[in-house]
Length: 397
Image (tube, rainbow, N blue to C red; front, top):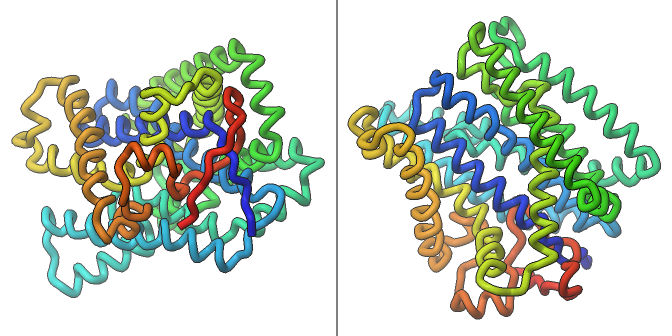
């Protein structure tokens, strides 16, 4: 079945900026004390990344299959190959890193690995892959819902928003008991915890021209919303942190995060739209293309570098530098090191299992000129370039 094959370049910018912020929030949280109030304030703003990922995931899939739905079995086979296999492999790797610092007997280690595989808790970022696979499994139904309600998407968004607010209120509980206490540790790995952002991404995909035109024509409003919602998120954090502490104060499941996420995604889209209108195929464009193509691999790899730089606590490599330079330098090393490791992994026969991408066989110049590469698990090749009007050919592998 043919899928939509033109390319929306603003989505690349959203993806790259979001991934850059993911590494930033992980760096800040890893290098600095979790109960640090100042660094918690920064984490509060960076915590939009989780929900933004799901907006982007639903957007690219729904736009890709908006007109003609995928055949379920081939769709699931491809998606679970590119996401499920890396999920299992990296869950094993990160479980191994945990066992390095906290050894367990063989039988306990085996159960520990099984639990990590089932819950997405082998490391702090793998929940995203588990939730993505849940969404892939349900995508045919999700697509049917959005098409069945295409004349009532305003009501659908409103109902989904109300449900998300109620969900966040229920999940954001500093002292859960009973059933809630048992469920909350796994809330981050359940797709229902993010349903509004999936619905939002899907609806935007079905109304892309209108939404794109609205953002382009109201940049001032978008920037204003970014400032106001960011200030509101920070004010909420500073107001609640004396009672709940910095760790709980930065919880992503807070209603105040919803408008902040939407505003950040809109600003990133506006930046991407401005860039796409001016892209000329030069070094900047090639850099963004490559960064977008490698974003998923960097997402998988970068915690290894953070672990290596911070293991040992006060005696770690990252701790040798004063605050805030420890975070800045660690961030740069994590980005550059992840890209370097990824390039090596992409040359090996294990590329699909370790990076979700096929093995690199051509030079970077040839790869750029001939192939946009397979779509990342969180992206799809969608849309049209406004400046060139050409279509980027996708080499399906």
